[in-house]
Image 1 (spheres, helix red, strand yellow):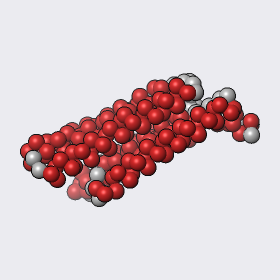
Image 2 (tube, helix red, strand yellow):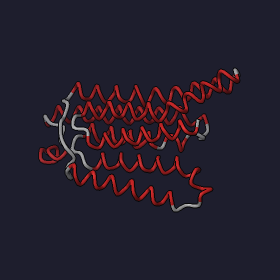
Image 3 (tube, helix red, strand yellow):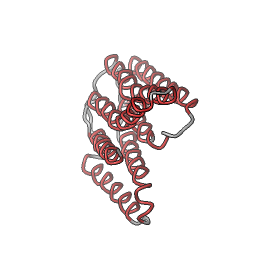
Image 4 (tube, helix red, strand yellow):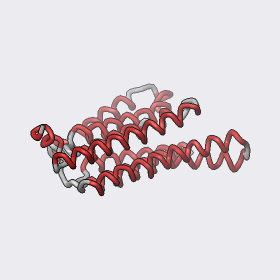
Length: 214
């Protein structure tokens, strides 16, 4: 199962990188959904196995919570953002710093995290591997947010950053999970609504043109 977890994190990291270079808003939303699928799949499968083997209330609760987290991140949030695209437009743009500079930035971040992980004592490398992947995905998501002018892509990057922390929050108290999921959906829904209203007022999704209009 640990090997599958690493494979899932590698796949999620690759999808997050693709999100940094995605041209259209729809592509970014699809990659957001794929990232959430990759990150949450292993946990969901593990909870399903525990449910089948254990057949107890605790295992059932853990499974439903894992499913709720996975479904919210992979389906509900992308659908909200897609509604925003339907109500506005499917913006096609490139990173404001250029694809080459962004690639150098991503490669530098990946190299830095690899060096930091490799220089740790061997006993700590296995424990810190998940943490390193999560921080790497968080960095990639941050690059997506700061290099775009399309607020829907920025919001998608924010959700990618939140998804990247999911493996680190797996042990949080169960009573906090509904609050976190509700907050995530609420922020995405409100952000999308504000973007749609701003588009109606200014006729564009480009944030720098909103400033000019104001």
